[in-house]
Length: 113
Length: 112
Image (tube, rainbow over all chains, first blue to last red; front, side, top):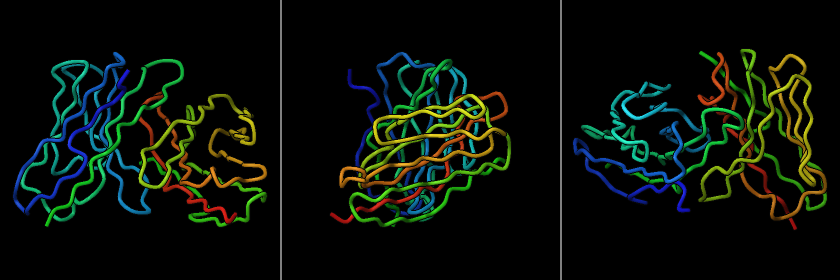
């Protein structure tokens, strides 16, 4: 099992550019999440999804968009990148009942210059 | 909104010393989870606690969930260099076991 796979691992964007961070999981989890992690600040929830076709905002959704057309994929779109979006982004997935352990991807380190 | 505070922010210990990190929530939690993140890595799940007053052990790690389900702690006995990393608590609330609010984490460094 690959678990949660994120691409790319690293990216440098210029201010105003757009990009999509890809996330795929092969564990048939209904729930998927996008977090950003800034130094010393823990993880902040950007968006989450409880199933294909259903998405909802987390704590810090501004400047981001998501879609969930399949159970496996949960891409995160950055429109008009800003320096404040420089961060490490983690995608995660979990079961919906019982032990709802979040399985994290390896992360994408994004720098906006 | 819900806030989860975690202290201390940093802890440096000599190998063999004990370590404890504490987590406090502004609201009652439905469950609390603990994660470990090695430098440069991604968070890895350690445990989930759901019952009031629950205590769970994993080898040298002891996890507690408070009676009021608003606080939790992680205690490591006799730290080893392999324990180095940032330990995060994450709380679920409002009937949601899955939508977690993370604390800022405690960075543990261990001097051999």
